[in-house]
Length: 155
Length: 372
Image (tube, rainbow over all chains, first blue to last red; front, side):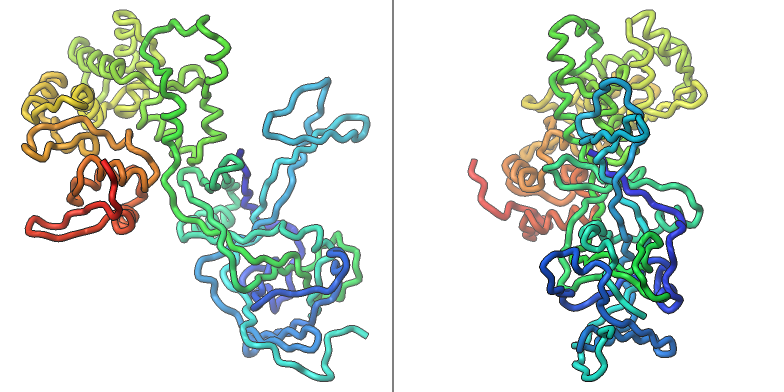
């Protein structure tokens, strides 16, 4: 089985705000946290679109602060020893019009959609797109400071 | 600015991966991005195998490393998301706790030779009709190899040349060693008979003479010529060392159990290659294919590295069962095909052998006791 990785040239994806864009890549920024974000929810999709916190950039000192709930995290830019490629999984859609019952290859799982009165092959072949090559990241490595009054909750 | 989960973060969980790039691969990718030239990397492997990543000409082993921290992949919200984000909101696409690490690896070509064994091509065209069904079932095509062998395309092509695998109408066949020896003899004789220079021999002239007088199909002789030299503009420039080496191996191959003295080997070898190339005959060409007897370093037996197991544990076991102790210069040729470079070879020696020094120098012995 072959899984292709496509190295995309510049795309038309939305760009990051200038404060983040200049860190390493203009579309993707990597933020490293000690530990992980824990979300209380009954269903994973509940967190979609929800606010996590407020990220502030101090351009003068290149320091970052992230306010999550009652915690204030301090971070800074750090170089990544070996550059990281950010890969995004994509599923190929092959617009092969089927006529009759032509067999598909053994490795492919195929779904056949009826689209515009024609049968279109939707393969389950996995592909990955390289959306960014990142050499620096924001690391929040200090212990979070509890803060009072300032919360990142929107009223 | 606001940091939110992207509206599709639960759907996209696990859709992001971080791949650590070694310096040369990084340069290759940056060049592709800068010049907008399309670059395709491939991950190859069957479901049960360890994955490898291949560029056009290199193979890397892929390993997953778990991080103690987690990394958030953050981007601006995509235009498609219809949430009411403020202008400079950024969204978390995914939380990643692993990184994929790449290390240069030796392409896994030995499987090819194993798969093709038993159906060597020896010039007889009598395969048709005999057990046609079973023949087809075990047929390996070049396309099959491109898709399943864990090697880059260029390394696969080089591997086919080095392992003397013919491509006959898309089907891959190992050439029978005796037949190869025969063909090389025909080439050498042909060059003399037709007064062709080995630096620039007409491919047409040579292959025609072999086809007419010895029933060797042109496609076969041309492929074999390409294994031992370069073909450009219809002219074959013979790689003298490579061909000389193969002729030497052809003689040595008969001496697995019955040793041959180095003098006798050299004499036979010189006769076979003829006066033109006798000066190229050199035992060093056969390194990694013979063992010199301990008692009298004069007699040699055929012992090819290619017949040894690929897995390091089993290879060292076989090597130490053959000889209980080795010097670096003697064991190194038998590790060359499983180590990417001399650094990795030294690492293998460190891991699987014990070094002891005495008056004669450094000897490597087994770390564990092998019975037998």
